[in-house]
Image (cartoon, rainbow, N blue to C red; front, side, top):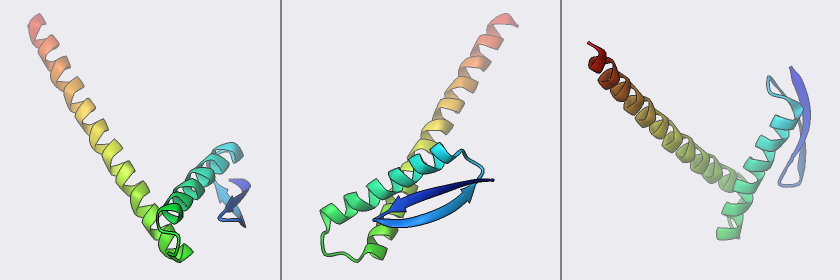
Length: 88
């Protein structure tokens, strides 16, 4: 397990994870940026609410990437099947 010191909204956290120190810090910077983006759009919102909205935004991005990956995999499978049928 890797340990990394990260900062989110000016708060320091020490986290452990399987990823490298550098990757953990990149992920933390991404999360911090997403929370700050919410705070810029809604300046009066409490930080916890901003964090929840940022988490929902990140989950939405992840879901979109997952669907895109599924579509690409389906397309590859269909094309592979078509190419295989040409050899039969």
